[in-house]
Image 1 (cartoon, rainbow, N blue to C red):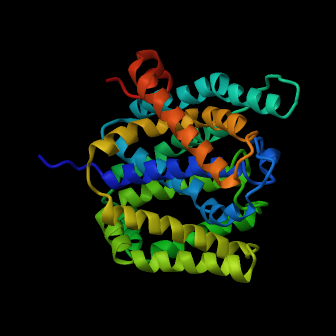
Image 2 (cartoon, one colour; image 1 turned 180 degrees about the vertical axis):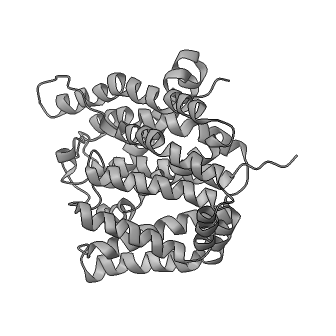
Image 3 (cartoon, rainbow, N blue to C red; image 1 turned 45 degrees about the vertical axis):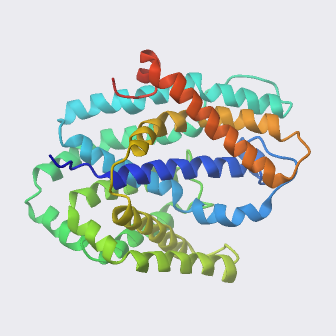
Amino acid sequence: MLSNRKYYIDWIRVIAIGLLLIYHVAIGFQPWGRLIGFITNAQSWESLWIPMTMLNVWRIPLLFFVSGMGVYFAMQRRNWKQLITERVQRILLPFVFGYFCIVPIYLFMFQSNNGMKVDYYPNPGHLWFLANIFIYVVVLSPLFFFLKKNESGLFVLGMRKILSTPLAWVIVVFAFTAEALIVDPHPYELYALTAHGFVLGMMAFFFGFSFMLSGDDFWKMLAKWKWGFVSVAVGLFLVRWIIFHLQVPVYLLVAESESWIFSVLALGYSYLNRPSKVLDYLSEAAYPVYILHMIFLYTGASLVFPISIDVRLKFILVLLFTFAGCFVTYDFVVRRVRLLRFLFGLRKR
């Protein structure tokens, strides 16, 4: 029996979370990292900002797109009440657990490392993303179920027709440009705990669901035009970096962001739609690793940054420590303890 599982979505999700971890490690080597609550190295590695700024315009929006896609699959075998119940267990509970038990740990580490008074104050930290996702599910699920129920209606059929052409990219760019002009974020890449991040995330969540609702024609269009999207993304980044010195008009920034996202989706669909034991493992591990990673990142930074070695070697050591700490904790503790599986949003074995 053939599986209808979209393995490329799982791979894209795993890759996106992996890039998030790498980006967070890199923040520790930027002079502004301390301003947003990261432990930073005394010596900066400022050239690292070039790949970071390329990633920064699409890494978080991509996760919102993928989250919307995930809700589409969750709805296939659940009604509205079952969907909300499942999302409470998978998203809201880990958020609450992390809010009180994960985030305070690395906030204490930051305070201690910087000679500040060690004190507790409520903060969602990096888990703000989960709170946003849960709100989107609650707010948008009535619309999603309506669209799913009326898949043969004129609106859905029209949407499928439009999204099966490159006009889909134009519509998405137009929508996100309008959001940026109305909300006027400064900078555009600041998503955490901002109105811009909330609205942008909800739009990406909706479009992610819509892409899946559109069926195979959308994905075949992406595969057909994949190198076009990649060329536009690379070209716009080079224009932003070389000509505008990273200070481009917002419409160019949005166009670049969506081009990267369409490129990743297209390449994932074209080359990653296959099962593997590695994917099975990483797909389950990604969520706990995301929740845990800031603790190990801050621990690694505290241990490595005082050492007098090359800044690039420090980056590699902190990166390895973060990944190793997360996966060892997940593999030997989280996935094996029933209570922790529950608190980290993992399904029952």
